[in-house]
Amino acid sequence: MKGIEGLTLGRYELKRLIAHGGMAEVYLAYDRRVRRQVAIKVLYGRDESFVRRFEREARAVGTLSHAHILPLYDFGEQRPWYYLVMPYVEGATLRDYLHKKQRLTLLEAASFVDQIAGALQHAHDSGVIHRDVKPSNILLRADGYAYLADFGLAKAMIGAEALTSIGAIVGTPEYTAPEQSNGINDYRSDIYSLGIILYQMLTGQVPFTAESPVAVSLKHIQLEPTPPSHINSDIPQSIEAVILKALAKDPDARYQQAQELSTAYWKALHHEQLWTTDKLPAQVLLETSAPKGNHTEETRQNITVREKAQFPSIPAKTSLRLSKTSLLALICLMLAVAVVPLSLGWQAAHTANIRPTQSAQQAVTQQEISAMTATAIAQATSQAQLQATLAAQSQVQATAGITTSLGAGQTLYANSMTTPGGGWIDDGSQCYFSPQGYHVQTYRAHLEAWCYSNQQQFSNVVITVQAQLLRGDTYGLVFRLNPSTRAFYVLELNKAGQYRFVKASGSNPLNWLTLIDWTPSSAIHRGYNQTNTFLVVASGPHFRFYINKQLILNNFTDPTPYPTGLIGLLVGGDSPEGSEAVFSNVWVFEK
Image 1 (cartoon, rainbow, N blue to C red):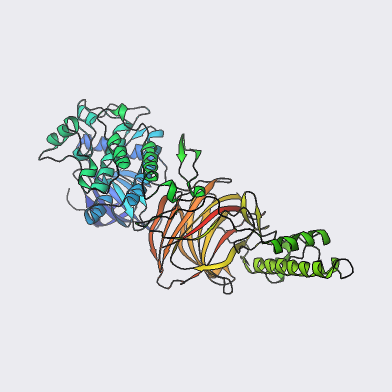
Image 2 (image 1 turned 30 degrees about the vertical axis):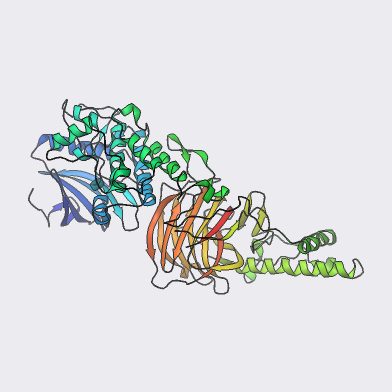
């Protein structure tokens, strides 16, 4: 098809050709109505079978809505052209990325498998088979976020049409399952193709090549693939077993769900030195079962990441407790007074946000207790007032109407967060401990509040924490915090399953810099009382983020980074009743 730059299709102005294949061309275009750049896939309609295939793609993609499936904005025809309108993704394809890097690490491959498996699972649950899963159909943003695209061979099983001639070979031979050579396709064919991609990511090559497509297809049918470890000796046997099961000739012998392949891969990582349980804290390896979409998967929560370094062995139950002196002071104080004074207002405006308490000075006198007890009470009261003051300084009032859209090394810090200690603010209101973990909360809308540990500053580290949103809008992990200037970074999640990365400075959130605005991710468990595990890798000006073991941001660079600071936890949003989250199992590792 001759290039058609400069042509207008409907409301779309074609700017330049960005990709082409045997059946279609893709153009960068401008949507005059919405005023944004889009990608348009154009097919010249001279071949009726191509046109029917093109229309089938539009219908198939139109039924799907998933964070890792490239969405369809629009489709139409302007004879002799038919076109699909999709988001324009700046970046490259997985094919380009593999050509550049040859082989990926076990962890990097795991992230891509998890993202694409999630997309395929959604498609399969919706009755759609892709039938052409390959690296060139996987688009990558610069941060490593992946989209499965090009459902040109997809066939909707609901109301299925006999559009493919019997015995016809569909798909790309290097990634085609054996049964597809006989015109047989089901969701397990997609799983085989994903297994080929996994093989290629870890070995740098596909298992079967030949001089002709037919010869490649025959190899898929007749030959067993070379064991991946024979090509890359760094591939463990447990990982190899996962790959070879995905590549079984018999579809019944493969994984029966795409997400099952991803889960098996992550489990295999756990059994190796990089991910073994005797190298990881027990709290960081908890696994639960949770529903996801129309199927149930074993939710892979609470993982810490390392590139090449291993975690040291750490006692499973690590917590910092009150000293005997502090405990005695606390007991005396409880006997002498009902409540200690809490001063949680940031300036005068915040006093309405805090539950009132009685002044200890009004309830304690020298005549009522002994001099020693009075000293203990004074110490405890001073500590309580300090905690309240620190909490008050760790919140800011947002302008009304602002929305929520505004290789680890040794262990440096570990805290289960179920008992007081570890340097964490504990004022009994904004920041407090319970058997479930460490609570951070606000009581009204338009308020951002954070609590932190003043025990140690960190710079280049890996930080992980588990969290549940109990009410309200947003919650996050704070790092490199300077309490006096209120400068810090925070990785936030919201109840809708989105994340953002913010660089805070000062008391007014309007002046905070949103480095990455709200971005959806299938890795995040949505809603309330759902456990999400944050993991931040901070190295100088470079940051990498994981949620529930899935890479959500491969690399972000801040040209003017905060160099070091404390760690903390944050909640906020616009809900009238405020927000609350509970956090547990904070671990910090040397990077």
